[in-house]
Length: 163
Image 1 (cartoon, one colour):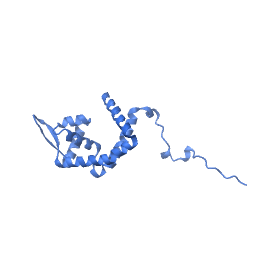
Image 2: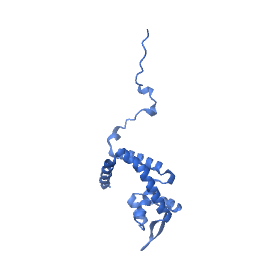
Image 3: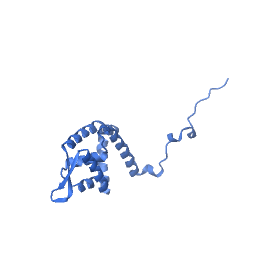
Image 4: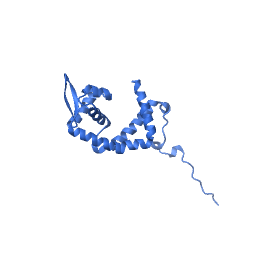
């Protein structure tokens, strides 16, 4: 009587290459690498949540800064967000085309632009923020938990002192 063959665990060669884990080598313990991977995951989830709004994280950030600081100079907004000037101009052009933000001459400095949300932009930001809190932030908090989220925010603030 033949003994039945037992199935053994697949040998690495039997697992398709795209399914095999990749050894991260030196990257495994680098904080910057891990932060970047986490940022990519969070941004991907943000994009899914904001798909109906056609809103990218940088655009949301610009709208939020302008809402909190109406009349702030364009250069200060780009500086606060760490966006280089050329990229910021293109980003702001998009927001203006969508009639969400507007430029106006800065009081006392006609060479600079002050930034404001339009009434449409104010409503849009409120709706997007409500939607973001209801979906994206809830998913992030579900992964971390409320206490760990607050701890992580504090730790990330500490890291910003490196710059």
